Length: 142
Ligand SMILES: [Zn+2]
Image 1 (cartoon, rainbow, N blue to C red):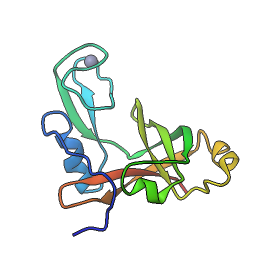
Image 2 (cartoon, protein in one colour):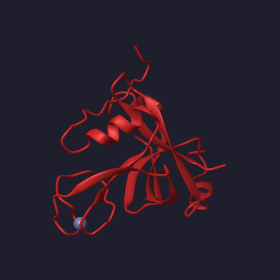
Image 3 (cartoon, rainbow, N blue to C red):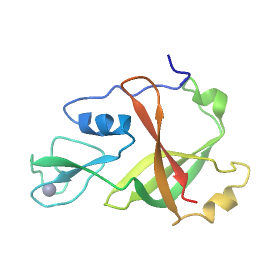
C-alpha cells in the first residue's frame, strides 16, 4: 500500500503503455514518429505532425527547461485540495515538444522567484502511486 493520496492515472496500453512501463523504472519514455522523426507529447496512435502510424518509443533524458508555470491556489481533486497551493508547469523537453506537470520544491509564496527560473533546467522524478503507476513530477536542476 502506498500513501499516494491523489488521483492515479489509468494507463492505456495502446497509447501510453511504454511511458508507464518506463516510469516504473524511473525512465522517461517518449514517442517518436519513424517517418518524420519528430517527438510528440502526449502519446497517441497517429503522429500529430504527419499522421503516420509508425510510432516508436525511446528513453529520453528526463530533462528539459521550464517554459511556464502557474501557482494553483485551489484544487478540488482529492489529495491536491489538501496540498495546495502548488505549482503546475509546462516543460520544454530536451528531445522536443512540451509536457505539462507539477513542479516540486519551489516556494509558492514567491512566484517572482519561480518566474526568474523560466528557462532553467529541470529534471523529472517519478513518484510511486501504486505498483503499476509511477507519476511524473518535475524539479529544478540543482
Ligand atoms: Zn510524423
